[in-house]
Image (tube, chains in turn purple, green, brown):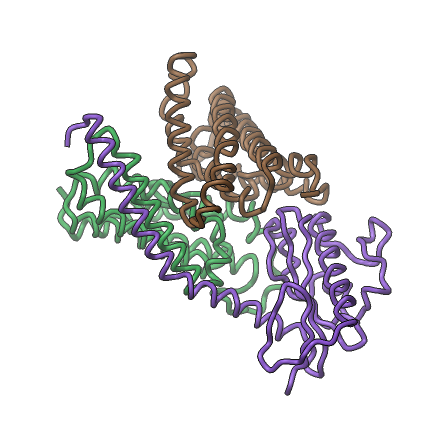
Length: 181
Length: 195
Length: 192
């Protein structure tokens, strides 16, 4: 086809239009599966962080990660010591900050079985009680901030009475759940 | 003119996109931290490659010459987005592992390169075969690099622990390791294929 | 976003160097980096394109794609934006400095397929940076790219004078050299 201005513009516009429609259709088709996947991920994380003998879970977040937002979900024993932490969202540096998602990483180990309310919530470099990840001080600080956030939300929640539900509902705040075994 | 069988086989060995044509280096280095990731990336690229080669071959006579590159880009980008969405929905852990490299398939020089060099000049069937051959060649190259890095760096292969993890230098799954492994594999491939 | 500008800039140039740590922009890195002069020219061009792209792409994403709920069109829109910016730069450069235009040759249109450019645009969005931090991030990344390129070409210019076995020459040598450069850069870990 000759490269006249009219031809070029028409062809380019039609291709773009068709492409957008096609992609839009696929997007619409995958909206539900994707939402389901994300809900599942959270539900699974929730199940993993709460101790089998019963406890609480609370979400916390920080926007001060090296690559942006860090979101995690913290599971507490009834005496508000930490049982387990799972990272939900992070875009930290692979190999450095992303270590926070690994099992037995230094941050998790610093928090396990400790009560955040009785800790100095900062990295050792800043005079705190938490061991930072090697070469990822900014990521570590954000992680700590997020744990503190989760603890704060939990404390706020203790005041009100929440219904215990069979199906775990995760809100943006804290969730009280008992694991029925 | 190569016969159809040669077209298919070409991309797998003789003109292997990773080891010979030296195209698509970014994902070859960035996604090969394990055999599984390399394989997944290869397959995703293969899918886009075949789809875009076929479509471009189908519509080639309607594209004015001066706008062919932007036209190719729109086609390729659309298929990349489609693959992205499908991966997010059906293989979320692979999607998370490959991260930004999935949308970056659109600038993988292999795809634009084959569109320009082959699909825009050949019929649909041959374009499909070319895409398939190049895609398979890319996939096995990526899987190999991933496997080597995984064994040397994590003492595992496709996720199976080999029990040697504590002896293995982690550097192989990190950045420098990627460069070294690819460099040495390329030397090896070129020496072997020259015989 | 509280992460200081310093952390972003220093981090993007050294700790998280786009080529040596994140593997973005490797194709031109291996292809252009044999002479220091070309590397500088390429680096300058990429810096300009990357920064300009982020200046346009960020508002397009925030004020067009998001309100319309079509975030998934990000890849398509961004790559078309990059292709247009590069085309525009080519036209302007041809008029303003034909010598530089000729020196860069084929590498100028190749900036469109430089995965670092598209990569950085996508990453600045996924990291949730605001406009200011996004532009700083892109510019700093481009500087890191230029740095890696220039360092690489410095080494390669020297290596050319040494005797290297035939099978190792070319890309393979470049890759191994890059690996050592990447190892060196790992020393920056821990500074941020």
